[in-house]
Image (tube, helix red, strand yellow):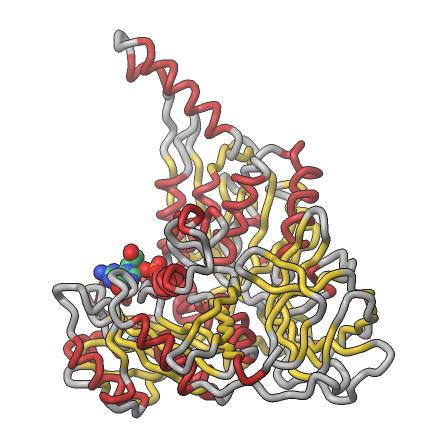
Length: 599
Ligand code: GTP
């Protein structure tokens, strides 16, 4: 153990700018993983991550690198997730490091998360090494990318390393810069223990495996540790390092990154950002920056078949062991029966949870359209947090409603600036704040806008307006009062609580109209006419009718080949699992998400 020979770094980048590929190359060059084990994208371990090509969980790895001075350095690379849903994890991973490699795809230039992550790194006082990546691409625009980095962040051309994670060009220079430019960690291995939890995972056999960065002191098996935020204590049974496989060690000391196993049963006891200290000799001040992660969006989740309620509960409990950001409580919907109100960090998180339920637990679920958390001041002065539109108080029962707002940054070629400002301010209730130049033909636009307006279909529309060139990032800045109303939907004259939604008064009619029309397309015809109505503040504000139809599914295939008929029947059976009878009307899963694409 020689602190001077340790470097703790993170790699930060906009999504798809090549982080995982670069780490793979570094692993190969330093031979951390034997060649035969080497497969593409070693660090993205979850199936879903690999298929979607996105990093969700940060995975650390330690490599040994012998520099020109003949000394062998230990480099801990802490990979960070790239999606805005997981920005708190990025920030905590960065807090575990002294330096960061900032990767910018030379064919894309600086994008919104490049910027956002750089700021997180600067806030954490990290030494940043800018790297222009993917220089092997024929459309790489190296000079333009450098000038954007100069304009936006203030790097110089000499600071920037030109590299390709694909061909390996420049990767040795990156390793050299890590050793030369990034400071060795400070800290005293003899001081009382002070360690940062930057991640935690649940293992079926060993319980929670805490990923920690030791700032002060030493931790060994047998030590009693304490979680600073909760005061819970545990006895350490094993410590070790990531290669990225877990290799046990005798101890972890100030400056080192590794794992701690201590008979912890649930990930919620080892919260990301919390400080670990010694139970017998605790420190008085924790490391800075810990906050509770609060879910930002809620949706109703119901088992595809009602009899799967118990299994769904068990599956959610299992997922939660590994995912402390997931919260849920039972919900009973008159329309959908027994289910859960589930809180997520964002829509990607919601999608990942739904997919894991289907893949790992084989449970199909009905999800209702997600909503943000509203804060309502009631007439009696009480403040209630509303996570379910169906529970939103009626007009006249409350004084004021607040909803979460964000600061939104959009980076775009200047030619789309006018249309983007128009879109955000007139369609999305945004307030334009400022514009800043970024390189030759690009600008950074800043807005304040309600989270509910930018969370759902915003990004798709932004991409359409900018022909795919704009990128965005946002940060929650708090709650602000807003003129909101609840709209309920009636199908065949019956209220379907799971279809209720909250909308700004100015958009009430337009959105209600779109929703009933969308539902008309999504709910199949029945043998009787079905009115679909939207009601707000006591009045019906929109209505459509689904015409009656006698429909024989097999009629279409009459005389056709038998396998096609079989397939159709099979498909129907599949689909049935996720249909719900409301009164006499059958409503498919898609209808409950109708609101997602509107607004
Ligand atoms: P997230 O984890 O989602 O943030 O993505 P990432 O930054 O880890 O990107 P990843 O390494 O998955 O690379 C994204 C895509 O770019 C993949 O298709 C890679 O094959 C490709 N890619 C990465 N590095 C290079 C490079 O240096 N040159 C070229 N030509 N392609 C690259």
